[in-house]
Length: 510
Image (cartoon, rainbow, N blue to C red; front, side):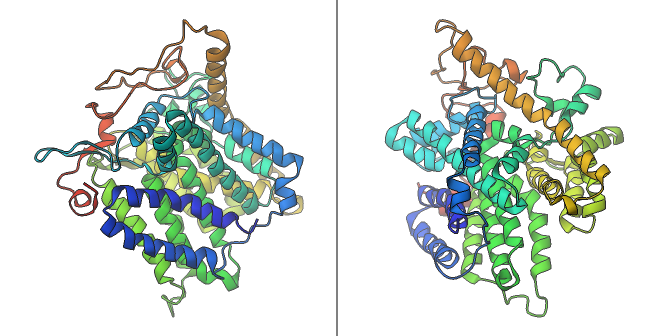
């Protein structure tokens, strides 16, 4: 599997190249693309070593467990609603309309471009959809959704391959850890939730037991915001592997980590904010302060700067998230949220991991993030926590999957297992909801009961209610045919007047 790292980096780079040539003037895009291609050549086609992957072809491709692993990942993606073959949660209303507009409009997507007045553009984290949207422009909506399913599946395959390699465990175990890892939402729903969620029926959305605060499990991330989750996971695990380069290869790590972080920012900027402290501590550890610039790779760093700056100029063209600052929380609310959403697990790891900087940063971020307010909703808490939760999962996996002789005390080991089992209920509820609604659609409802997709323009979308009862009698969340006519508050996360922005004035295609 010597090409696994190359495939992973290309998987992340391709959408940015589509964005570069689709959104940026050719006179600017071409020289920037040449820099990125040169960086790729240095990373992928020369002797600059990437992290070693320990899988053999016979282990990965030809064993029966590998078939089970592929089926497991495919089933997980299927139940997430990606592609529209199973029940889609409410957030897919926005995921679907972004893909649809990327197919139906020229790039960049302008909804209004008058000579004077507001220039309305789609400004969002569109990167993950771009390969599928390009297919959709050629072959239509159904082909785009099928390719989106395959693209997400490939992303999860890459993530779990790297995860199994990093944890030195089987692909099945690594995938199950990713699918089932979560905080103790079941206890939050049981002891702290008011009216919703409840433990019965076992299809409720347990994640929202704390109201405006939520640390989403990886299954919830996939089922609700796959466009941010999958590429963020891949960037994180690649950065983790880069940290483990052997001494003779360590000089490659800093530039590679910065490039991967910039790609994470392109796909999921809030997740990149949560990832940044981990990257900084690794860069600090790897820097020789007697010769701090010795290991820098100028062309790779230049490519990372291009990706970051273009992404930043584009995202800041949307002014929706202007509300910034700190929010106050009652002590009892904070302690309940922190302890149940990862804090207890973090504390149990302390006897084994307390010297590990990753453990320290993970705990600090999980404690700090709930107090940060960005925008009017809870997106920052949910998305900035992706990285510390992923690191918490990795730290837990390192302990649980290590050789029996190296395991910590039995108390620590069985406490970790108990927390993992209790935590698995939240993702299992998400999976069960998808199974229930999908089965109902295909096998209970007759054709006369099934609601057709809305095709008339709408200007607003009702706020989500109870997820298990959203858009009854239909499988897909297609409440918005296009963002062009939308004027409610949530749509401002996607549409912005960009006339006076740096990106529109100097970089964007007209």
